[in-house]
Amino acid sequence: MATVADLAPYVENRLEEPIGAPVFWGQSTEIYSAVVEAVCDLLLLIGRPTQTVNQLVTLLPNKVYQLMPAGMLCITDIVSQNGAVYKMTQYDMDYSQSSWGSDWENDLSDQDFDQWWPVGFGMFGIHPAVSQPLTVGITGIALPTTEAWPFSGNSAIPFEDSMFAALEMYAAGYCRLKEQGNEFYEGVKLYQAYLEVAKRYTQIQDRRDDMIFSQGLGLQQNINPNKKRG
Image 1 (cartoon, one colour):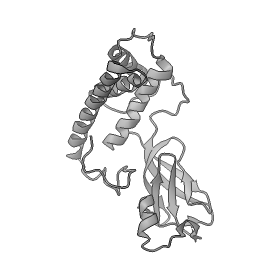
Image 2: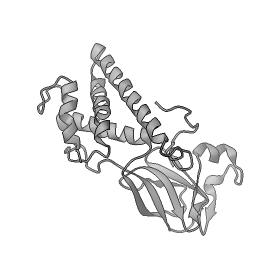
Image 3: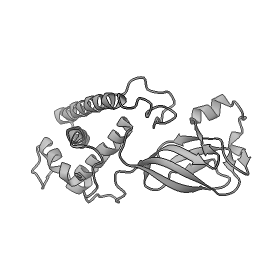
Image 4: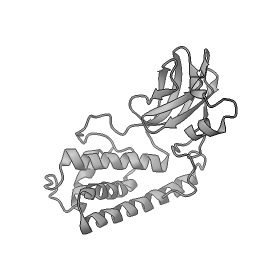
């Protein structure tokens, strides 16, 4: 399996930098970081990663907002003692209030909780909060690397070879953000080209399973579902 370091020379070539010894961009601090960023972005856009993991997590008592499990980029599903927990949004909790009031953050349960929702990429919420520690099963997308920055480049790329060019385009466009003028706009073009590839790849994958990116099963973090990705 290819690694971040394997894609770095191609990114450097797109940036017209000396291969293996870039001058304007630091290899470990910027180019490797750009490739890791590209992998994270594509994982979320495609919604069909190869790095799905399951973890047992103990929820903290008396807290609505819980921390994201270590090593996870995004949660896809939570299973508690009564089965799969219904996924909602923060908007639903604040405005729907179908079975709770405006003070829902103070609600407690001595057994289980009924719904959960993502809060950015670092936390998630549950309702009602549990009054004692509760262990649940969480399924989600693993981070493409658990290394501390700056990266070593040894992290594996969880996509097939056909997607490497798209990752290189994103990384090169990402690096060009620190430039100005024509170089910056060239980076914007690379990013748009990356989005076109991601869009096409998503359409192909949709023929295999059009439900995996739904609100119930997929990774939508926003309030209103997107009608068209890319």
